[in-house]
Image 1: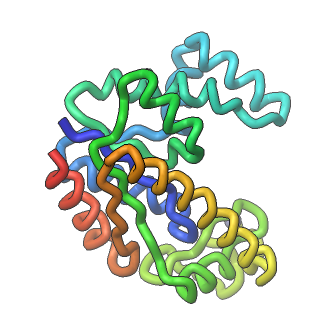
Image 2: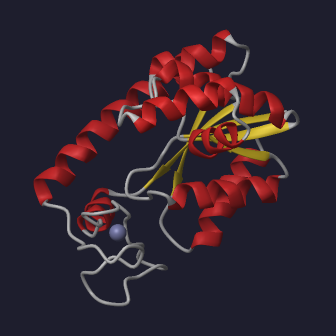
Length: 208
Ligand SMILES: [Zn+2]
C-alpha cells in the first residue's frame, strides 16, 4: 500500500496541493491535507472540527495534536493508500503518526533552486500571500495579485529568512525519516504543472 508524505514546498505554495491531488489521481490513491480535512470535519460538526473552529475563531493556530487527530482520521479513511500533503511539518508530528501506525513508505520533497525560490517568493502577494507561478496564474496586471488584487512583492530580507526557516524544518524532518529507514526522494518542482505531477506520481507508484 502506498503511503506518501509530500513536504510542503517553499515557493510552490498552494500549487503543491493541486500537484499532489493530480498525482494522487494518476496513482489512484487518496490525497489528504489538513486544511481540507478540517473543513470537512467542521461541515460534519465532528468533535475535532468544532474544537478546531473555536481556535480559528479566536484567531489562534490549531494545535498540532488536534491537526494530528484530523490527519489520522483522514489517512485511516483513505484505506487503500494515501498521499499526505504539508503534514507532518515537525519531527514530533511525524512521531505522532508513527505511534498510530501510519508511517509513510516514501517521503517526497518538491524542490526549487535558490534563485527560482527567491524569484517566486519575491512576487508573493502582500495580502493573500499567494505566489505567482512562472508558467501559469501569471498576474494580468504586473505587480497586482491575480487572486485578490493585492500588491505583489515580498521584501528580500523576509524571503531570505523564510527560506532559512523552511530549510531547517524540512532538513530535520527528512533526517528523521532517513533515520527510520524511510525512502526520501527529492523531486524538481520546476517546469510545467502536468510534468511535475507526473514526476510525483511516478515516485508514488514506484514506492509500493
Ligand atoms: Zn493576493
